[in-house]
Image 1 (spheres, helix red, strand yellow):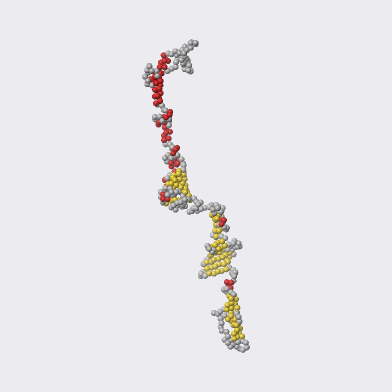
Image 2 (cartoon, one colour):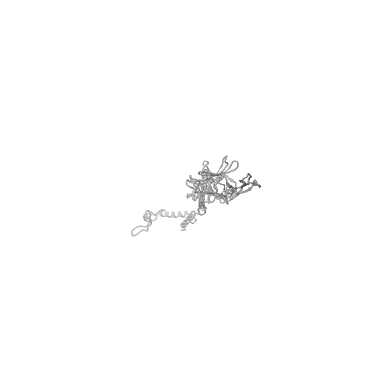
Length: 451
């Protein structure tokens, strides 16, 4: 096919180099465009080629063959084209199509991709996934730890944790199932047994440098400690691996030492519910000893002196009736009540003051007892002494008897002759005087008697 190019063609009618036809103009003498054989041959071949390409036999009497050919050709082309409203569903070989457009690798990757709607549920190895991204892993909310209730060592516990992959994660945790029969009890902590039923186990670090924390429930079995938190730290055998147990504020027991470290005064206090102190216990650095004070309930300190002495304002022995040892704190000297002894004085109970001993009671080597006072003993009342000892001696009333012509006096116990009478100056005694010997005991006079 070509554009008209005869000498009578209208040059550039449809643009530069695009000739066209003209009817000519008699007024100007312009000729109409001449049609030559080349032009008509070109038109004929173009039309016939379209008809024959559609598989239609040329027929001189039919004048719709070009239209039919165009329609048939379009229909044939449509059969190999995609329908827009099918949105790609009519692609016969979709994998080949994706490969041809460069999406083959994308499809391969998509085949192993996670589904967003699964929220991680389609991750095949969740533990390895958590390990690879360095995330914490909640391994189980109720696992049998050990499988029975028998005792366990720490080494066996660590081996079990390793078998569960606990050291593959920077943080790993699980909870023991609530079954005493299916969970072990760790017995070698040195600070109390750990029953793992219902316990929360947390593991941090690596196998060679680990920290394990176990929190026990409010009830337990196998001698385990309830409501406690145990921590095991192991940074290698050269760094003293071991357990420790956190102090519980709601009541606990302790197998190790409790240290309050401070150069100033540090108090141990028992308090009432309202926060007021009921008892203080303290010892000052370089002080006189350990002090116990009743707080708001009473004054005064009980002091356990660092020299072995005990100091208190009063010491009372007994429950009902009491024996008390007290001090009013107004004496000019210090007194000591001391029990001592040696070979010659086996047992001595002695009262001393700063100037020496005052009195003592002593058990002697023969078993007898003696009581000594270092000074004068002055009783407040002498009535006891007066009723036991002779206070005075006297001669009683005078008695007279004749002896020259009568019996006179016979030997009578407790009397003494005080006089002999010769009334007529002869050589014979006429009479005798006597008086009884009397002793005063208490307020009563008594006649003495002879042996």
